[in-house]
Length: 130
Image (cartoon, rainbow, N blue to C red; front, top):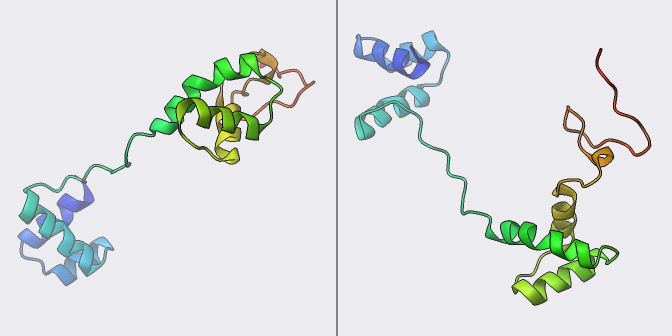
């Protein structure tokens, strides 16, 4: 049984909100919030996290970048950002452009991420597990 359910069951069983808070190690306000949630929604389930709008600029940038890097690989971040603004009509900062380029998959397997998710330093072979 979840903590929320145990706290509410204890209050329903005759325990005061203050006593339930002490017994379960939560604040009295938390007990009140659990009871209010059940009263308004009929459930104690947590609400879904709100993550905001879909990042459309990032999606467009990731779709645009491989072609741009193939044609102008030696361009600066500012030049890439200006070209993206001219073609897509969206302005991006140099930091955003740098992060987008760094997050693209590596063409060279030697530049790929290690199994722990870190970038491998150039010139060092990957360790093989026995």
